Length: 265
Length: 252
Image 1 (cartoon, each protein chain N blue to C red):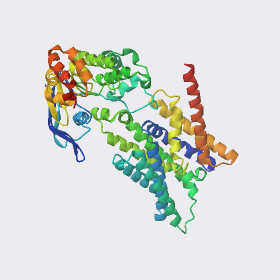
Image 2 (image 1 turned 135 degrees about the vertical axis):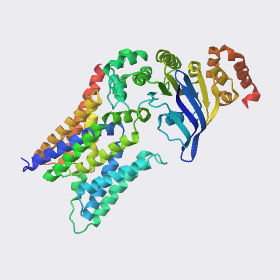
Image 3 (image 1 turned 180 degrees about the vertical axis):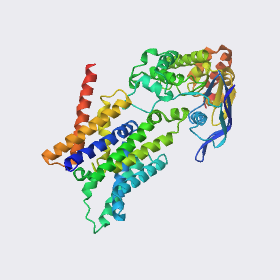
Image 4 (image 1 turned 60 degrees about the vertical axis):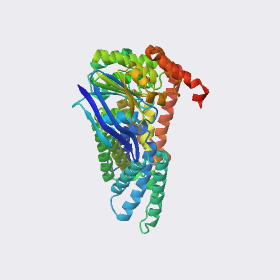
């Protein structure tokens, strides 16, 4: 069945949705959306460098994403507001990445594939990488679940409970780097944050515990991936953006229903 | 039994030293209140005690395996994080479900177990945070501006609850606040902080200390006036003080 490009695409999309669900919830809870954006944009620079040095694109994207996340953490609280720091980092790394790619003569690169993803072209090896990354992210977050939640609620509370919030935040940064690196081929650098934030935000309307919010986010993400692929096939639209469109429809529909429910109560 | 001993503690943020040469000891069963204006290092002191801030100088020693119940000022989540009171309470201690109700009862809100945290009122929220700290049967409760956002009757009720908790469980309490008169009336010992320890002692002694007056005298006339009603023995002193403020000489 993996001979079929649609089946491979579906597996890749579900893999990204699975990795994005727990991480996306933390991105929403901790207001890290812009942080994710900076990390994802930096991955383009990683892709460019990987192509120039002829190393694995996954490794290049992961490395630069992690470096960017680290720099952003170090720079925060040093005079500039966090969103300013991230705005500078996100867009300058994207710009540098695009410029570096333009120097790579001789290699014909379809840059669009890395900006918006090329899910229909994923290979079996890509699927292995995506699912490996997804399982790693889930294992990391499951292992540190309660400490991560406590750190998110209040860092002093974490200290008083004998935890080290900095270590917990490192887990999230690492997970973000891995997720960006595996998702760049599927939805592209510009839409990765959409896969993190939109299913989680949509899920908030249904969930009453943190755990159910993660599970529902995963289900919404997976359905979005499948329905988006189907729509892309039928209407001949780009696959990555179609997936994000379906997720957005989920978000709008669930938010409207929740708003009406609140009015009725 | 000494639960916490802070010796010659200094805390710095970069080149900026916010806390200098602070000594503090807390024994089992006593309520200690730290008061001080904004930026006086109250929060830094609390952070140093829980290990969130490394001392630049001096030391913080805790009794081995000290059970700390920490009541934060607020939680950094808004309605985006769905969590029930019960789930929140069991999160920090990984404790048995059966322990939730007694802890909520001690905090005065046993009926809130199944509520969403985001749907609580300010007073309910603070009591749930208190219950979350009590569930581990702490030897010491640390409260960080626990009544911020509560009105005066709400704060007073909350501090009465703290006194009741101390009476029932025998734990020590260290709280920091700028909510002067209510906090002080509930304390055994008050430490007035402004980068260093200005003065310390019983609430009455601190309230009449010149260092304390210098910090809080003019700016919090209302709070001092209320405080005077609670403690008649400082009445005359306070009266003179306030009176002096009204003369043209003092106003300059």
